[in-house]
Image (cartoon, rainbow, N blue to C red; front, side, top):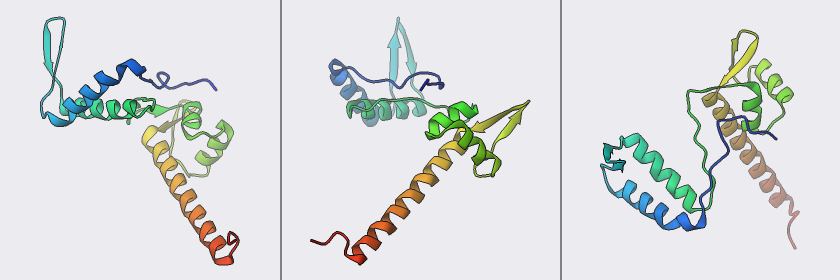
Length: 145
């Protein structure tokens, strides 16, 4: 599958771990952080400091990190990839009113926050159904030895 978002998720190298630990510690413990490069020093805004702390934490855990702007409008192809569904299935969801969208000329555009909201709701629904099935299996004694 071709990634259509801005770039592939970023993974840290093993030899980056010490630097990542230092970035995570500094961004979590210091209210004001500065970035110095080429003789210029800039105060990091709080929002960027938080993003750096979260990114460092996830990279230290061995996770790959990707940054998605929240106000971004996605194409149907991008939204389908984000939701891990086919594009035709996504179109059916859009037309059924399950996910809001806008028409830009002849193309549908989906706000990333709407796609992420749908994904979270779908995951919560799946967990509830799985919990109910598990409880029913327990009540029926299916897994008793």
